Image (tube, rainbow, N blue to C red; front, side, top):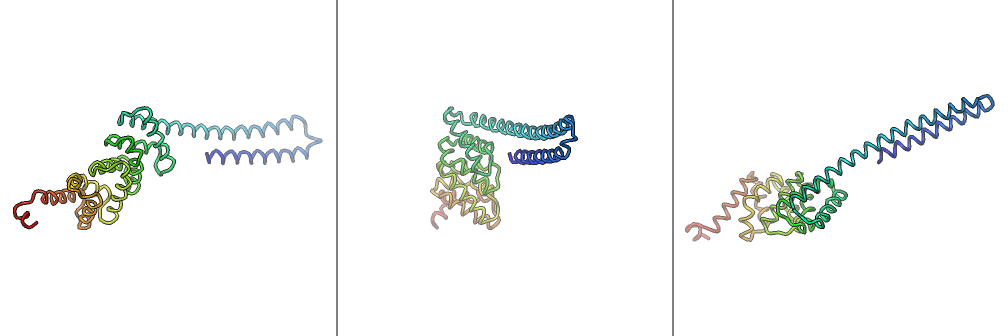
Length: 251
């Protein structure tokens, strides 16, 4: 759109300047110039106008082609959402609008937002959970953790499931994981890999997402990250639920 405006402004300025110069020349040769000369001058002016118009038309055509291509990508992404969620037409309309809204209000495109919806649907989140915070949380997580859309949505959905949280808690998941990664070595992805191994056990013991992530962050400060941290913490928690006789006596 900006390019079209620039071309049009330049075109108008050039044509106006040319016509002004033509008028001055016409005044000087008012008595001597023939009708043929005047006609030739006007023809040249309109030839220039036509050439610039073709340039604007070419730019407009290119813009339309890009827009059509992007729409096709978005339409395909929403078809994938339909396949993953098997939603009704009414709910698909809500999901489609959500993708478009986030495409306008966030750093992600509508197509990327649709891809996130697909991944959340595959992970088992309902449309209500996706719309109430699941989509926003996964996009926030992707931005904070410098993750791909699909991976961020997978992490958000899995963590919600592990700790029995609702879609509206997705923003909380994003904040906790981003904070944990910011306090220690490793990344959001490393914390997510740790939670994959210890999350269900921690949740079953009533340990919160914040507490579990905090412990994994402490592990990371000692260089124990990812799956190694999750496995180690799971072993510690399991030993507390089924302690040996010696450990039981000490407890």
